[in-house]
Amino acid sequence: MSERFDIYAPIHKGLRLGSARMLERLGRADWADPAERAAVLAELRDQLGLGREHIEHEEAELHDAVRGHAPTLAKALDHEHQEHLLAFERLEALIHDVETAPEARRARAGHALYLAFSIHFAEDMLHMAHEEHDAMPLLQDHYSDEALMAMDARIVQTIPPERMGDYLRLMIPAATPEGRAALLGAIRQGVPPEVFAGILDGIARPSLSPREWRLLEQDLVLPA
Image (cartoon, rainbow, N blue to C red; front, side):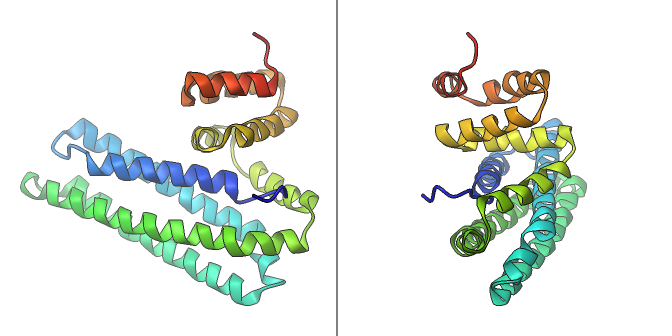
């Protein structure tokens, strides 16, 4: 992997993890149980919300940067984003169908939602790979790491702290040990110590295995 700053990898790995978990959740859901049904659909709406926000972030900071050097690539990425937005509308309609379907049809409605999400997941994987394989090298060719980090910082500044926690719950466990340490090391430099401690105790530790947590403690030189 390149040692250059990669603006896509951390968030894309987190979104991939969230969607993979969501696909599993939808596949084994007990649609007949009202509490589980409500919980699964709420989780799905939240995952789709992260996807919508991510599209907004990329279009606000990255697409014009790509467009200035590769307009054809930018047009393709814009089109893929529009397809995603249409998919979100279709999925929301299917969520509503599960919520309102009579008992005799609810399991079929749930399975239709599962299949539709699986298609969206597959298309999203291709789209993110397109960005990482084509857009990221182009951005690295034309922008310094400092400029890319500034784009990333502007995106982060638009995310409320409580929403940032939702992203970190996916990004932290999805990262390699080295990537996890780099991500949290950067966060550590930008937040008060008590906020960083809350991220470690409330988000990082619960999302990691004991071994992963020990490695993170070592990498960040955390007090025993």
